[in-house]
Amino acid sequence: MARKPRERELTREEAIEQARLQLSPLWVPNPPLLAGALTPNGPQAFPIDDSFLKKRWVILVVDPTAGSTEDHLISWKELVRRYKGYNLDFLLLLSSPHPFYTDPVGLEGVVAHYKAGEILAVDPDGALIAALRNGKTKLPFAWAMDLGKLVGSGEGAEWFESLEPELHRVLRRDDPGLALLPFLPRGRSWIDDLPGWDFFSELAKAKDRAFQASVDLVLRERKIVVEDPKTVIRFSSPGSEVSLVAETAEISGRAGEIIVEVNGRPPKDAQWSEDLVRSDVGLPCVRAGKARLYLALTELPAGAREITLKFPNADRTPAALYGVRFSNLRAAPPVT
Image (cartoon, rainbow, N blue to C red; front, side, top):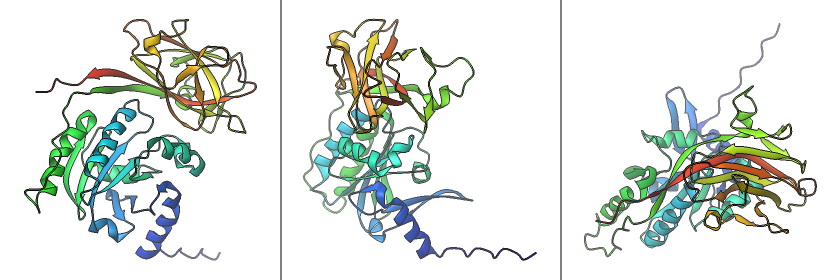
């Protein structure tokens, strides 16, 4: 029997070109600059474009489905505003816990929601983020790099406060008298992320699911698509903030309405979030359009936090849900 010819290994140049083509749809607006690879020696990052090694970079890595991400993006946009005039380049790197983040169409909504004038990229398989971690265990984490060398970092809720002094040190290395804004004071509220869950993993369980549903839910590509207006989903929230990873499932793109209740009643005024609006009949709802994280409820008091989701218009404008995220508001330490 004839042996199958051994496949030729790619040259370095061919491998880089292949990575560039695969990653191009996931980098906005620039062509890909970095790629990650899982090697026998562990995950490694390598430049696709040599210009990356000739510049100073600030890189922030976030999970776009974490409840704290919106808070961190406020800090990120402030960082870009403060330092974009100092010969620095900025890269916002998103992990991709759900497939819509690696789909060019689904990415449109993410770009519109998150972009702050810097380069935005999605890591499709986690290899690049794994290579960049370098001991960092929390998301988000941030790096300052100068000509390919790490010169500063920060992680978790205080990444901004840890990174900014390092940026001052690097920028003043060549010009000790360089005028820079004072450090941003720590007087803001932070959000602590709590364990959330996805319908994909919960529906695989035979019992002890995190939710109860009035009808059988069916998975389609790691999400549930609700088309039955009788569908009711109930679950308990461990935190004061509740978010839904959702999108419309209506072919024309019309938003799917998800009615939200707390302990069997409409949420109080203080519990309404930026993504909670009134439906056509005045009920509190999340209008799920492009795939992203929607903050449904905020400032829920401790105690009973029984959440109900209803879909009365699902037969006309179906909604799709990937999962639910929880978090707690936490006051930052007082300014000293």
